[in-house]
Length: 514
Image 1 (cartoon, one colour):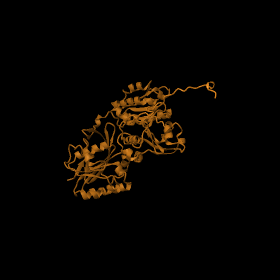
Image 2 (image 1 turned 90 degrees about the horizontal axis):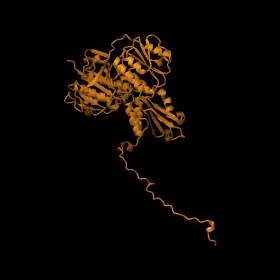
Image 3 (image 1 turned 45 degrees about the horizontal axis):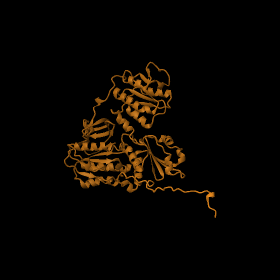
Image 4 (image 1 turned 60 degrees about the vertical axis):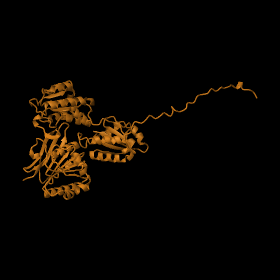
């Protein structure tokens, strides 16, 4: 009889959830809370298993107790060290009875970061050999910032993995991407499912729930705000021009596959424009082509991402010529928008602008805010911003340089650490760094600072922030929260006031002669 186990995902075909024995399967997850839910769902679907964890205590994963699953589960806690990983098979051999079993290995990305590529390959080979000798199956579930780096590496290890998949949150649902998955019937590859959460369990969403255009007979039409043609009349009978974006939206609500072109003059239009685009995409489906033409320099990186997430097919930048603009429109023919657009616009707005802080922060507050933003999995990996360390010229103290720093955008933070200023520029590209520094500092930044260091990858930023945190005095880090202090008496108010005395002055003539 062939032994097999299951992921327990609801309404998903068996070929994508069954795990054969022997075999090693790996699921990567962006968010820790999602990985935790998945672990608990897998546990609830088994009759017997062994649980190993490095991310948190295995007992915490079973609190509260799952409604289903084994009555007794062997639990193992593994230190987050390379030595513990490399000796895992030896430790399991000494501890577990030699019989077929199902093992769940719950880890963080930081655990595997300690292994080189060669060591990871050797670890997979050794684990595959150990599982084959015991007719056992292991499911590895890994989460955390930097997970995409691990995913890219694992995609080359198909000889040592029977299955590889990825679970990613998309604001109001989850995308489950299967790279490959082996079962007793064969192998399936390159599959994608949409999942929702019901009673803390992942289930597949029926494709029939997605919007489908009713008709495609208006694909040749162009509906545009009139300023996008730079004063030119309609280019043909297929073009209809409107006085503003509001009128354009009203007409586009009746379209199914037409090309809709909005204008953008100022940054304060972003919120309203995002709302209109989101409404059109959700109600009219994926056949509609939505374009935004930037008439003046107004878009920031985070704004572009917001518009794309709301349903835009293309954004034409301000420096694009009319011929380039028309070529872009021509290239959209026949396209369909295939990305998922969440139903709640508020979730998108909040996720694209997660930091509502700016300016100077204390060292501790700065590190906490940057860490929270980098760990926000709703933002793109290695695209959340830049961490910049600046050392002032010898003639200028760090405090003097700090007075010249005036961050204006939310998400732009600064703190002083030793003889350097640390800046975090949210949603800033590396190519835009000089422009950002120009607007932040009152004086030319190349005259204020002698050198600078820049970190732009999530893992690099988190590593630097950890080092900064370790520089804090222990008493400062461990100090309890400050209570409200009593008012300090004013020393001037308590000082004895001097009372002036009258002094009589006499003239020279009033003096007595000797």
